Image 1 (tube, one colour):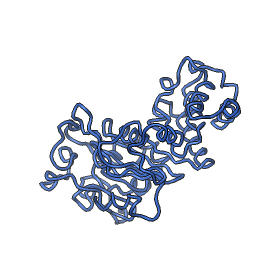
Image 2 (cartoon, one colour):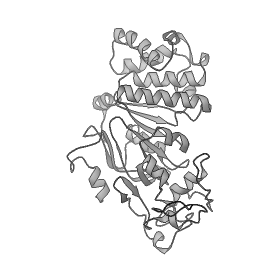
Image 3 (cartoon, one colour):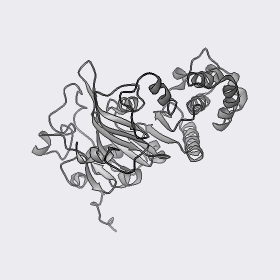
Image 4 (cartoon, helix red, strand yellow):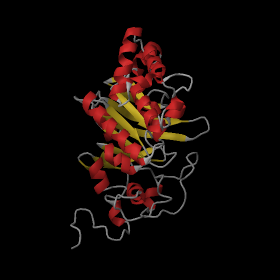
Amino acid sequence: MNALAAALDPTTTGSRPLMEVNGIGITFKNGVRAVSNVNLTVNAGETLGIVGESGCGKSTTAKIMLRLLAPDEGRVFFDGEDISRLRGAKLKKLRRRLQVVPQNPQTSLNPRLSVGDSIAFNMRVHGYGAKQRAARIPEMLDRVGLDPSYAGRYPHQLSGGQLQRAAIARALATEPEVVVCDEAVSALDKSVQAQVLNLLAELQANLGLAYVFISHDLAVVEHISDRVAVMYLGRVVEEGPARELWDNPRHPYTATLLSSAPGLGQRRIVLSGDLPNPANPPSGCGFRSRCPVADERCATEWPLLTVRTKQHHASCVHEDPVTLLDIPGRAPTGSEPAA
């Protein structure tokens, strides 16, 4: 067990986060190593953002956390209990505490069910009685900013923003402690995105929810996240407090992602080459075939996440690789901007 994984293992630490992912990995039948040696923590009441290119393993990691997939290796803990191999009644009981808001509510909400029936179905599966369901449906709709009369409407009668609010109400109906938002605002217009993000923040403050927020939109992740994990080719290459990671990235891939996001004030870094085939990745560090600062050390093994500051970890053989990038106008780490 590496040092970071040991630090995340609840058997070796006195205090524990609400949710922990300890060295998980999974390989699909087509030979694709989708996730490898991922370690993450989610604390009560906080938002962990997960970012990266399409195919980097974000959603697969979330499915393992939700126990929609069982990892080939590693463990997932929820409230101190190893849930990696739960089955039957114990797994069903767990699902009440772990809920998801998917990307597209137009496909996640059954078009044959009214909004109220969709919320009621989720509650009925988890043992809520008829009287409880009848009382809770209008309460949930009101909490997400929808009039209780929307319980009788069908998905095709709602706008995109209203649909996503209904999906959030359905997720919250079972009183979860962790909600996974998988690209939950990417299908919405920018103005509606802001409304839904503000709603999620308000619900978190009022209910003490923890979010795992997956997105390719870095501006959205910056707005809502307390901490951010950056994934590349199935691995976490950098993780730390959102503001610190944005202001001082410690991995060249993170710096590249930030440079490509409009409005974040980063100078553009253009990579050569394409994302490697996950079924046949390069030797050593998976990013080396595109990395502007790769050297011979990068071809031997993928470096483990190492501590760069107290809560900031990066997976790179270079101590501060971003200072090696040729980014015009960027001051070296720890220096003051030029006058």
